[in-house]
Image (cartoon, rainbow, N blue to C red):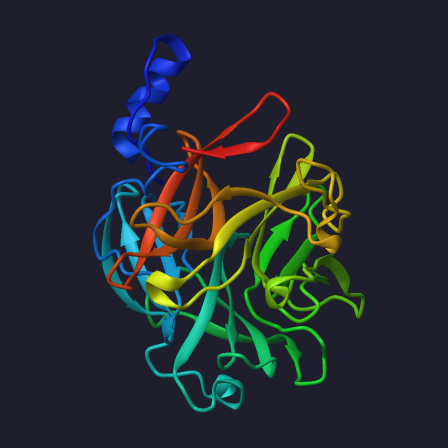
Length: 325
């Protein structure tokens, strides 16, 4: 989601058109591109964006009752209410009574919208991930399905930041996690969306910077499952050090390795986006395949400390590694 300048002809010329739309800066101006242009209601934290089967886009973000926004063109966004305007009493045990729900994960499968989201308090691993579904995706239309998984203060892992992934053979998995022993994965029932068995896979872990790895998102492309994730620290406004990393595996359950071959379970990850200029802490990544390109969705903080929606495009090298533009 950010671009500004590209030259030459042919394929590079097409990238130049995209650059004009998405605000990429020249290499001399910044290591990474700025976010692409978004307008309207652009405040967002932990965004998840999908293309609707009826046209346009639906965005969900962290907020009281889960904040919803819509867009017709992936540029102009408008407020669309709350997924749960009447509250979520079932989550109060984990939120300390707050209505604030975190890190929604949106998808559309089997004729329904699926929404995984987490309930917790900052710095605590007393957390849970819940599932709701809707036939329209509209505010107030979401039906509570149930609790998918929970963690306790002694679990050693944290049940937040969910992401639903479906393999090429149709198996459903939920990836999640934050700090502690890192990113985990469990198998789900494709009919109910709830947990299918007791197996838990270890996907990624760090041993530096307070073991700060979280916000996983898995994207399949050309024989690889790509694990996008965030390293370092979120939620500190313009002081945030969040950065976006990637690794890949031929199996959804791993092992995942970065571009240098380091295992994510040993702290590996290749950086593809980090703070630059007035863009602070770009992270909590999600990837959506659209008609024009693969799209990277994330949040960042501006210099005044406000969380904003970031959108860029991804290009892929001949060896299959992504670059943000």
